[in-house]
Length: 328
Image 1 (cartoon, rainbow, N blue to C red):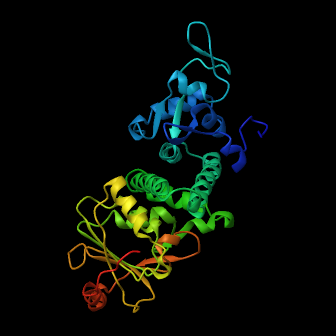
Image 2 (image 1 turned 180 degrees about the horizontal axis):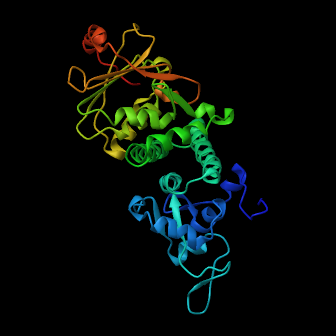
Image 3 (image 1 turned 180 degrees about the vertical axis):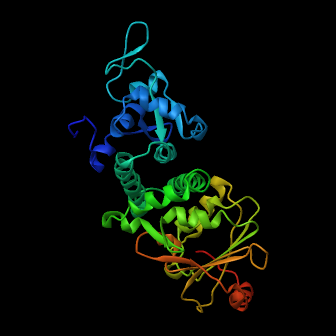
């Protein structure tokens, strides 16, 4: 679908038809993204080249001839060069991280409008995987969850180091759309994508992360992937309904070399959820969470940083003396 200026007005179904799986990643072609954003491909790529320091190899890469033949209607002539659809060069593709980065490079109302459609589609794909993880093995799901956590970590880095506060506020306000409200939480009064909110919190820990949450799952672990190396993590939980299984946890640790996570019980004394960073250190922070991180974004919820942290120390000291939680 296009408007009078030949700018592609995209729906989620149309975007899904423009997403390819190359090298195990979901990617989009530069030519398709250029049309979505209302550029000629060469001008679109010029904008990228002018900001090339923002696009690492895991954000964008050039296709080989064989990979290009798997996309669209590319063909080879007798000299082995690509032809068809006016292709005169090896196409460039952008990963999900790269597409998020494009949103900081391409400005204006059209860019915001089209970016919303792109974000919805990628979120819908990840939500489908989360809601239907029983259709695939725990090892495959753990791998997908880890990739998603890495993506959100990269996006959090983009937000903190590149996007200015004014740009971020404007971008966030553009998402006052009830159709995607479930994908967001309210972090300290600001609407933020749910996975990004947890990534932003966990990435701040220098030595310690404590999580108090009686309902835990594989996503609880995948969100922790952004934690710095050497950070000690303890999850305090009674693992109600046994949602996190020992086989899931073992697959996650073995497959991805994640540091061992300590599990201790809450002994049925805690209803609310908390995240404690760097307990009793100068950098200590405590967050009160309205919902479990395993359900991040499924319901409207708030995460707020606690001001009077010392009022919680007796509670935390009691938790630290609780017995080990054994996963089944």
